[in-house]
Image 1 (tube, rainbow, N blue to C red):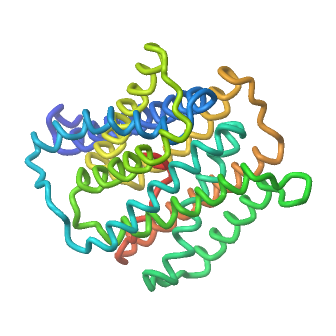
Image 2: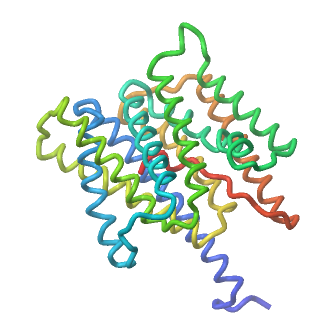
Image 3: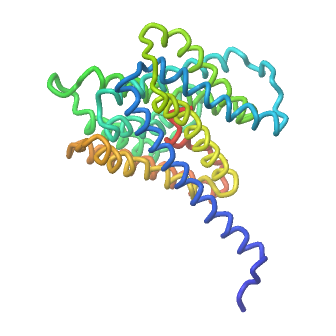
Length: 311
């Protein structure tokens, strides 16, 4: 006999499908945000882009916080929050700086390695134990980074190092976020936006270019798209299991390749594709290992996912 339309099983399945849809939409919006950012940093400085983007993001976030009655107060562990804001500001500045010179897919490949770094750093910072399968997955992820980076005097450029540094800042950001799990999501995002706003206020006047009305609209739209993408991803993770929807975040590299080619004529190198495939495979392996650990009744440690290199 078929299940009634309102049965719990069908409700769960419906929630999973909606979660997957929201994740795919959020990832696509992040990809479009990256395209817009790469387009704008060709004319405007990173500081100016972050300044105007942050103003627009605040215009979206503050009404949401007011509606949800999120308290505007200094959260517990202010030192750790300050560290998180600093890491967030550094990683997003590195991201925009890197895409000024590199194809989107190259930069995103380095950032996709974030979960690999997190799994490795967690053993030292959070005291988490890493078994042999996870160690193998982490090692494969690092091999993927080396394949994509191809470190040599001919290929190791300053923009590549900036992108790599940004991905490391991003992984440390995820580690600090894990230690601040009790803090409301909106409060965490607000801190990130305020960090980039302050950075923009300091850096933008050093290379200010008066934007055209169309570019000004694009700069504000950048912040709105970014905030909406965050909301889609966060909502997806709340209504569907993370182990189900998280793998869809790796579609970001596909969008980076396609949109980079369509908008900028970027052609991704063979070794970058190979490295990206190895990194994505290692990240998916870590997710599967966590899901298997949960099934065996062990405490599942949330493996952070790589779709939030920007705030």
